[in-house]
Length: 328
Image (cartoon, rainbow, N blue to C red; front, side, top):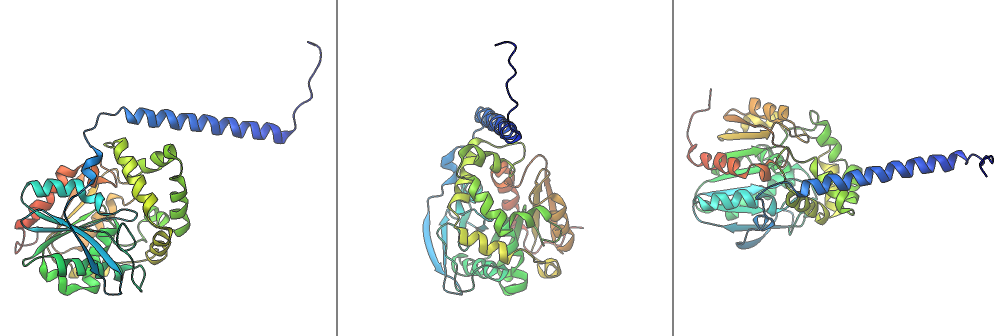
């Protein structure tokens, strides 16, 4: 037997074996990585993603439904979330603001959570209209503070183009990890490509790979609870919403409109944000006539969960900014 030479396997067999071995090693490495993440110390708990309160279902300008939830008492802060999210994305920050005397209103963007798109589908105009509807109907008797993360920040910037009159009711704004156009945001532009969005959704079918994919949205401070919650809202967002938004937001530019966005504004971004990098927030800050820029070291795109204390403090500071001169 020792002198017998076995025939060399066909190349396709060798190739298949190599690919299988590499895939197996990659999967094993992924599993080890995710198990290591699970051991990370972090006080972020899943119940912080919930926000009990009064639920509202408003009718949008084009016949859709805008779901919003309000809680707390005091000056009103209205929140808009990013793509493939829902009102739970802002819950950790909302809890902190409520504890310091604020009334919070968080709405689901059209096609997300419990909101439905109207006849106009998706696009800048729809995002701005829905934000204006929430401000008008749930803003209360006084002025409000408006806050937007990622796509939610795009919708608020679009108010200057589509609903400039609404800005008269705004005492301050926070634009968090967002962008003014797609031309300068190649990663964001790639991510909102309809095919890329659907491919991202497909990854959610495997829990390990879903956590790995969600990791790209965070900086240094994250937990498995965050990864799982983000994967959940991605999984729950309908394909039609992702395709519609990808097509509508594939090419836009709000830079020329920002000169009319004159409310006191804080622009916040993490230094490790790979989706909407810091340079985009710097562009927004430079274009806004009355803004200041906050750089958060080590934070990623999901800064709303990574540093909720800091965001709550920055938003609260806007309550006393009305009528103040623009910073030099």
